[in-house]
Length: 316
Image (cartoon, rainbow, N blue to C red; front, side, top):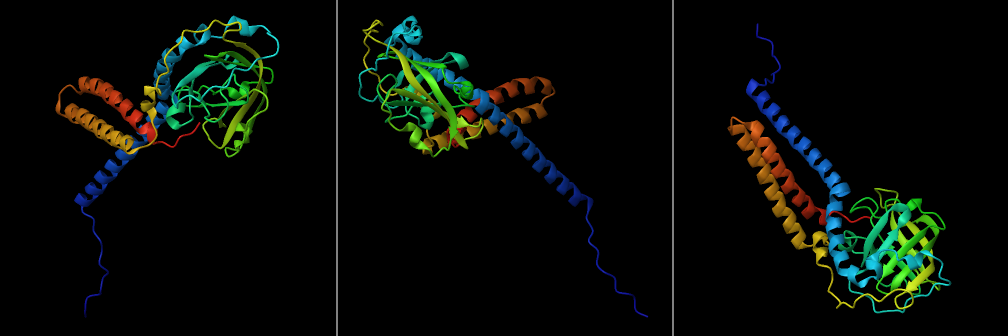
């Protein structure tokens, strides 16, 4: 009588199981590390970018302050009613990246230098004036954009502004007070808010809601007070015009150079992290290596995030 036919069985050796376990362990560590890096990059975008913005603002303020009445502060002359507001004479548009004045919003604690342009690299330095719209203090609609959740979030609390609240602008031409008319969200494609105006107005735009670019929050304000240089304000010392701000290179638009810098800093960051782990494993004092190596890694990681930030799609 012949033996019964049996089905072949698949056997897994202990060695195969160890390989699978090791692979899963490596994949798990990679995923955890990627998650930690994403969390750190999010923290950098929300808070670390404020460091870059502060550096840019300091450079911009040093350029524009000597040319401003009272060095950019709200002059006492503008705080009292001065009769019907006067508009400043129309001037040639400034160069992109050039500081043009300061914006002060006491209610929400804003005191920033405004620069010309709303490109990615412009708004990462501070509120940016829309090219093609009127300059602040001049006839027409002066429009300014600013970040709401990153790069020091100058317009973070813009929704708190109400009709009648004041926004002050100080430029080399004088000081101007605008009274808020409305604050409302619009579609990001609604460019009518930047349309020319027959009366002197100010328009501020930012993203809405916070942490999203789904809408734009738009503030409209009308010029209600003004004090021009030469008619109540002393003329600031003349200064030779300067080229675009050199700080724009801190957060430029995405280019081949930006990608190369990000790759180089990525390699350096990986090398520093790997060296820290290898040295710690081979020494008898890992408790000494990890703190020193960890601080070094975080410093290098900060510069890596600076290099990566321009590659992230811009939002307000």
